[in-house]
Length: 108
Image (tube, rainbow, N blue to C red; front, side, top):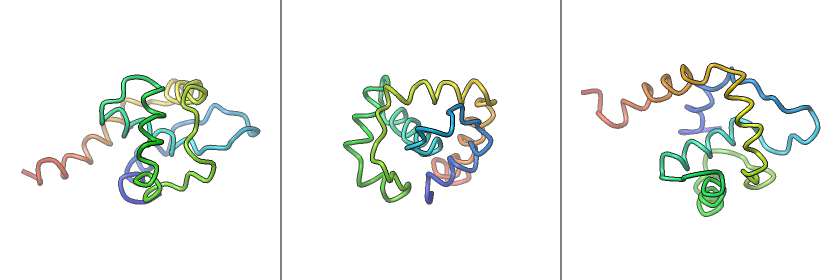
């Protein structure tokens, strides 16, 4: 992960992955990055997140590997919900937002 994905990774590194070892085709933090990016860009639900990720495939590939392509978000939602319940996601999100402040305000 590089660029903005690396920033997400830094803040969500302690998120617990609720999946069992089998069926791990997609990296949890890559899915979090795609879901957050799509939501910021106006996605309203998991189908929108998946559609957005597919339409921005080349952009996402600059920052994350996606060796198995874009995950089917309607199936991944259980994993993402489980991981955010198992961790303390509000501190993750607030830390991420604080780190993004330098991009929006220029430190003013």
